[in-house]
Amino acid sequence: MNNIQQGIEYMKEQKFEEAGKAFTEAIEEEPNDPVGYINFGNLLLHLNEFDRAKAFFDKAIELDENATTAYYGLGNTFYEQDDFVKAKEHFETAIQKGLENSDVYFMLGMSLLQQEQPRFALPYLQRASELKPDDVDALFQYGLALAQSEQINLAMEIMEKVLKLESEHSDAHYNLGVGYLFRSDIEQALKHFDEALRIQPDHLLAANGKGKIEEILKDQSE
Image (cartoon, rainbow, N blue to C red; front, side):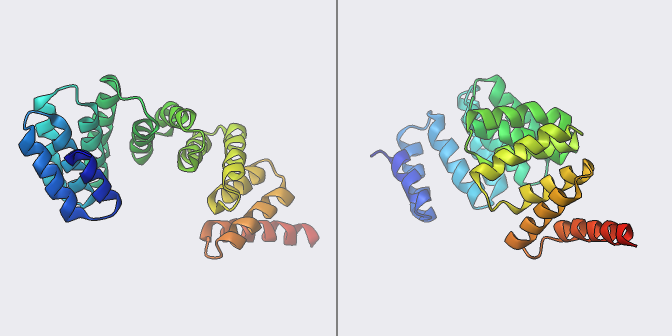
């Protein structure tokens, strides 16, 4: 096991000081290899040392302008600092330079959602869920973006898929409740709001949705 692999193992074990030493040794052994800098950047990002993380990712790109995971690391660094415009730019660059995995598409989609651009986020979140079909978060955010883009029927189909993967997903139940309310299917809407509240009793949006339905039923009975 080389220093990079050892450092990654230390990170998994949350032995961050040891990980830092291993990555430092990797950089000292091969100062012109961007991989050591990228991994040290990831460690610093994990520790919320954003400026230092950027410096290591920038050094990796200086050594190799096609170091895709360095651009991805920079994207994550800006995302964690709520700079979603710069995050988007770096995730796009990572993809343009050949990075093809679920995470980068998911983060690009999330950067666009954070900028309230759900229609632009859709293809990236869809691609993320295609590349990792069992990723509940990617699938749920794709469904959410569909709902925000007023594609209600397709959004509901996606939320059903989320529940097949994770039956106790309170937010998926809530969003299905909203979808059925949109269709004026009060019985199904109430069922899903109740499920959301059973799973998460403090789900305020589901409680609000249930309250609205109870008002409708009360008005109908009078």
